[in-house]
Image (tube, rainbow, N blue to C red; front, side, top):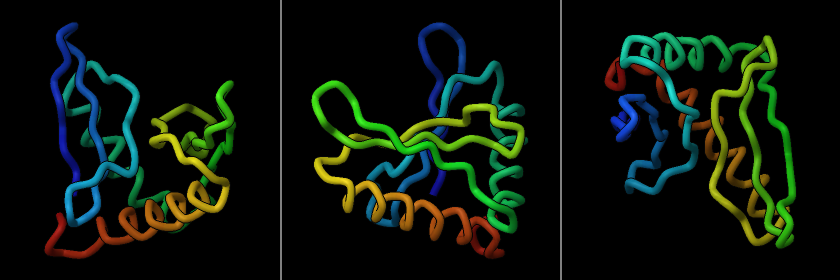
Length: 107
């Protein structure tokens, strides 16, 4: 499930959520909903290609990842995870949610 939000500075972002509503991924800001629709369509294409996940650790030792498109442009980032295994599980779940975007009932 994709949730689109309008920010106070008139930009838009989206989150990709689990069926229970928990956010797996938060996008960077975009100038319009149309731009978000294009990026989401691109996620369907990324499902068939190699994902670009950038794994990171913050200053407090928490784990997170960034998702980039095939050109290396940042699409968004994950929540913080307390362990590397949790982060890897988050990546796995995000891949499943992106693959689910291709199903007719989710279009």
